[in-house]
Length: 445
Image 1 (cartoon, rainbow, N blue to C red):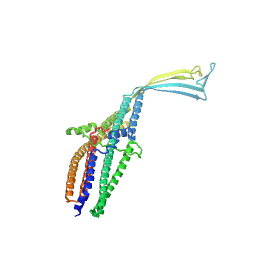
Image 2 (cartoon, helix red, strand yellow):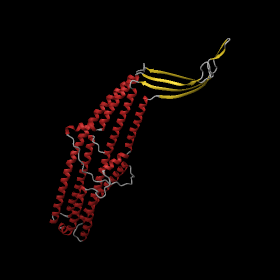
Image 3 (cartoon, one colour):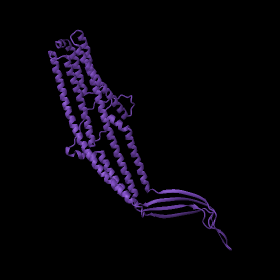
Image 4 (spheres, helix red, strand yellow):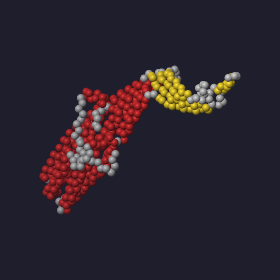
């Protein structure tokens, strides 16, 4: 039988390169790209959130609110301006009294220069309310910035681990190809002696073609993920980033009975809604103040001509007084503005309830995914152990002449696939940990 011949002629070399393949492959799962690693996850996240445009936009929005706060505070400051005028009036009114002569009531050429001063005295809290409103806007902007960073960090985590998986998967496929090609070269030499069949050669070539096809897909995915990472980092697309192995991640430790409370206290969406509710209340209060009186001090001082008895003389003058503005009727505008503001408060309360429901769903879904990922890691470790044991038994069977060298190669392929599944399970577990952290509102940057 052919397998008996194959056993004697192929066993020494075949067993050697398959054993080397297994040993090097096992190290791949535990130490991916250890010689060429360059980027840690922490480093990548820090660079992304420090340079990404969406973060810069959120930071600029906060600086904009600082300007609006300063602008609101100017309501306490006085307003000073200067006016000057010249007018030529004609005809000029004159009065003639018999025996006394003719008197001109005003000059034909009128000059005036005045400095005007206006200071708010009391506005029933309008300015204070406006400042508080802008301060609340800034708090929302700051929380929104944290939300942008958190979402961007999670996107970066997904990209990082997808890249890590593809790097390792390609390495595993390369090891499979090396083993298969070495086996093909040897089996072709043995076939020339009549100790192997063409079926064995063709079957090995099919296996090589299958693995090469899988590798092509992995390389395409790797190229795509590298392009995404370069975009995140703001690097040239010609860059070839390599990420290091960071699979060992500890899950958050929070008591089950307080997990939702923790999420509600830390999720950006909830905190933003709370600040939006405060902002809506401030807007409502601001609207209520629109029909309140305003008291201000007004003063003007300058010089002009036109005073008797010397109409041409440029004479100093001033005026000082208090101005009181009392709205009487605004056409029902304030009434409907209040109704609109109250509606905004109610809408935010509904949005807050919806947000908490979505967060509850995200938390429990993330917990379920993490639990499933943990079980898959255990199952994959068991599967790899079983595949290694199966290969050992296959090697023994091959030595006994019970199976052919192709059966031994199948056992080796099962080991490679089990390693790949274990790697994927560990990476899925790591990403699930980060997703749970995000669902709970724990910072990952």
